[in-house]
Length: 198
Image: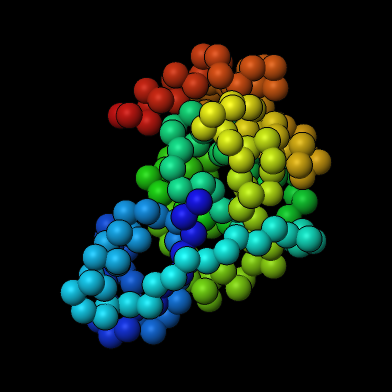
């Protein structure tokens, strides 16, 4: 699993329209960003770049940063979104952030109305605003090999935090029905894909 930190030495750097300033530490799981920074470092010392160890949480606080895996499809994005929406509505946490959602930041803002989103990277200063950093595929055993052994992502996450999995309504009053029973064959999923593609 890619998880790394970096800090630019001198020059600012814009990556996919996101400004990165020097002398500031950032964390990321974006593999393309890792390759780009590594490539620049080969020409001239451009940044400090190093792999980081993901640590399991022993105590879950009230301000949680949920770190998503580096690559996942739209179907998984929907399930992660439903789980996080359920966590927000449970009011178990005072603040929930979502890190490393990459291309799905627009999707999460528009359809789930999430506020604290860090698509590509998060600064150390922002990270310190959370008392719990939760790497989903590290903490939840059933999701460690999700690519090879499918399970109901939303239900696994809600069960881990002991909160109810809520029905979620997408735009135009379409709702995801019977999500707990079958997370892969609900008709609204296709509506969501169609709307997102537009």
